[in-house]
Image 1 (tube, chains in turn yellow, blue):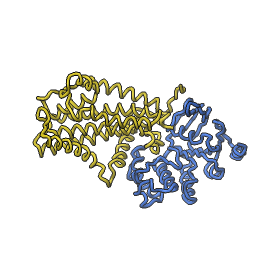
Image 2 (cartoon, rainbow over the protein chains, first blue to last red):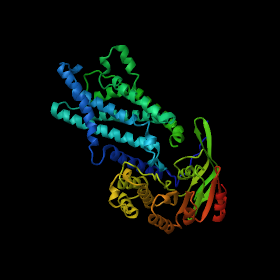
Image 3 (cartoon, rainbow over the protein chains, first blue to last red):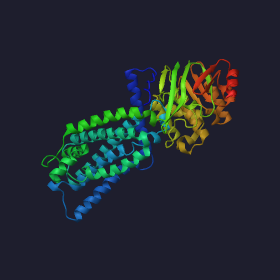
Length: 270
Length: 215
């Protein structure tokens, strides 16, 4: 048990000044992330579209060849592209969490920049980027297939909740990385790929037999897939979700993850 | 003013506890220029990181009543994948300075020229030190933490750094850690020796060097 670390007294602490500094730091980190991840010259942004598009095209092609359609006449392209962009958001926020301290060692030399700031900037940027991607896909689907989303607001809320949920997971993953970030990273990656099977990318809850429905509904992300799809396809299809359950997960993960990360900080910053 | 009271720092390595700092007391005022002498592994860099606020002490209090720079040295807090100019814009935003002005100042002071638009990972150690020193001057801190900074640049740039620090002598403090007597003599007016996790200040610089030589 290490002794309790006292908090350093910061220059001119004061709520509004602190808030302004915080906003400045997060804004700077978001711009930095845009530069490093999407590049100024290369086509980093295009990958955000290519991955979901390839998956949707592949799965839709298989279904078309086998003359299969989705139940309730849902459009397979819209179903899989939007489903996959949600998965993409979760993956880019959580899978890169474990190595946050190592890969940002140089800029963490600045006392104003904290691990929490880096994760927050990443969550905001990824959520925004994925929402933009989804919007463009829906516009294309609307133009070429004539099916427009039922409620963009509901979909937007779903994406934001999904970002918050992923943020909570990212906090916990980074806190765990204090023990061994490589091991955590190697465990998280297969789990992410496994989660594509049990998340709602490929199915709706009501397609499953009843006992399996209860099982997958334990996973909070399933609820958000259903919620976003209700916004996309509108009434007439059974959707299964419980936002209170999701809210509880978001709250518990973020509070617990935040506290755990505070305790892990001295080990991660060495 | 920057004040450390009873600062301790311990690290845990494979179940073993290593005490790096065992109760450091120090008070630095604007206008001070202090050299901290210590052998390799004596905890000089740890002390600077605690002063900067990047690391928190295991016990003790750090009272920071002035803005303190990040430790300037070989790995000067710049992002390798970004260009020098993007780093300047990034840190300008982090520290709330006008980005355009910071880029101009840094380009001018660091003399990096068109290299400002190349990624920092292509820089030599000297170029990196020049970039990071120019950045810290642009932010304009009250207290500068220098970690062997002078050994990275060339002689002419070192003289320029010294000039820049001298010019703001009355409104800035400088804390330099080094194991090089020459460096400390050119930058500082007081010296302290870090030994077995404790810091001892000497009014007379010669006495500090004598103690340091005994180590």
